[in-house]
Structure formats: C-alpha cells, structure tokens
Length: 379
Image 1: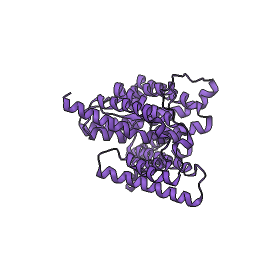
Image 2 (image 1 turned 180 degrees about the vertical axis):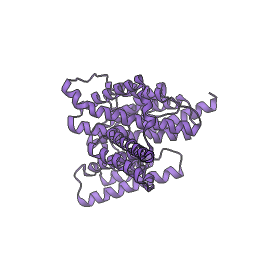
Image 3 (image 1 turned 90 degrees about the vertical axis):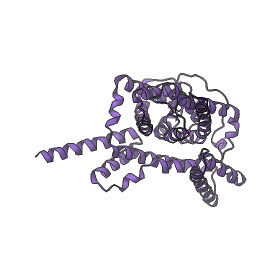
Image 4 (image 1 turned 30 degrees about the horizontal axis):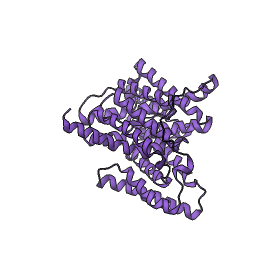
C-alpha cells in the first residue's frame, strides 16, 4: 500500500468506528441487552471480518438481521440464553462452511431476498415502539418524543446527502440537544454502560436449554449469512473484484463464537458501513481492523458518556435503518409470482419471528411455482 492509501484506510476506519456506536447500541436495546453487549459485539465481528473475511473492506458488527431473531430468544428464554445462542449460531455457520453448504445461498431467488429485507425492516420498526414508553411519559410528552424522533431521522437523512461524516451522528446530536432539556429517557435509564473489557465466560448449557435455543441460533446463522454473502457479492460486483463467500462464512462463524464466549450478541456484515467504507476509498483489511480497534477505544474512554444519550436520537437512527433496509421498490413489480414469493416470505417471517424460516418458505414457493410452470409448458 502507498502512504496515501494507508492514510485513507486509517481515516475511513476511524470514521466507521464512530458510525458503529449508535447502531450497535440500538441493536443491543432491540435484543433487550445492555449497550456494551452490542458495542463489543461490533468489535469482535469487525475484527473477525478484518482477519478472516471473504474480501477486504467488509465491515461486520451487531445488525438487525440477527438482532430481531435473538430478541425473540431473550423474550422467551431470558438474557442468559443469548450468549449460548450466539455460540451455537457460530458453530452452525462453521458447519455450513465445512460442508460447502454456503453455495446454496446463491440459489435464493431475488423475490425471497426482497421479502427477507421487508420483513426485517418491519421487525425492527415494531421493536422500537416500546422505547417510546420508557419512563412512562404522558400523552403530550409522547407526542413531543415522536416529533424529536422524526427530527432526528430527518437530520440523519439530510446529513447523508450534504456531508461526509457518519449521518447517524446527526441524529444523535439532534436527539441529544433537544432530548436532554426536555428530560427524555436516556440509555442509562435502561441499563448502565460499563467502560471495561469484556470477560471470557463459557455459558452453562443443558440439553433442554440447547433444544430451546437451537431454532433461534439456526435462524440467526441463516439470516446473518444471507445478509453477509449478499453484501460480499454486491461489493465484488461494484469493484469488479472477486470475493470469497466461503471464507466470509468462516469469518462469520468465528466472530459469533468469540462474541458469545465474551458475552456479546454477535452479528454479521453491515451493508451500510461496508458501503461507506468502500466509497471512502478503503479497499484493504487495514480499514476494518482500525474500525474494530477504534471502537474498542471509544468504549473504554467514553463508555460512561454513552449513558447520557437520549433514546429519541437512537430511535430516529433505527427509523432510517427501517427505511434503508426494506426492499420497498420490489413491491412495484406487478407480477403475481414475484409478489406471492415476497408475501409468503414476509408473512412467514413475521408469524414465526424467524427470518430464516421465511426465506426458506419463499424459496420453496419460487421453485414449486417454477416446476408447475415447466410442467404446464411441457404438457
């Protein structure tokens, strides 16, 4: 690498480390965990991708694709089951890597992928509604809170078009400047932030607990790989450089196992941060390594300040994530087969609260309808 490229990699990595903070906290709250569970997950996942990932420049962290599934696990079994679930998800991903089953992911039809993204967006939106009631606000306070959420989201969208710094910081800034004077609920009202290194701890497990956790782990593994491998494909096509999806599967498995062992929520590849990194000119593993180490420093140095962030700004960030995540334009395609696959994927995902089951269902509808059409033409 040239000196200029090294500077680009470091600057982009530092920018990404800052951008990871609000979403990592938001996804931790979505799961029902303390903020540091999401923050350190981003560190471990980014490190794993920087070292073992399928292509340079990829950024991993805590994400909605995995968080919405593990939120269901936490609500049903309890927070202590989260870390076992993340480890099992990592083991499933390593099994997929070792067996070569990751190649199946290229067979997922585009309509099922669109349904996956729409269902994910709807799950994230629904998960944020409960945070409007933290601190038991009155009706008028709730209206003001919703207004601040809308202003925070608008600030994020506007800054993304006008400035080069992470747009989520604009949402946090607006939410903080307005939220603190109004006395809105903060991150600290939900959970204290510990500015310390996570400890290695092997979660206890029983057969009954494993049986209760494994469906969620399977869902997390499949959903995480779906988003991760799609992003590797997207970036590879954009840069006209091949990516190794098998190696990315390995990186995700290792990252989730390490994340679970250190008491965090794991995750997968982040589409937004990866695109931000690539667009900044970063194309080597140094940028993702700097992002991971930079985030670790932020946690250790500024951890206690994170408690002061009003929830309104973080909810605003997630509302923009909802808009950016959902493949809403796919609904404009007026083809019965296409819409039926999307509808099946979304409804099954929402009914089971498991995106993996939804994607499998949508894929089965696609291939079943294809077989019927082939037989009809043949006859």
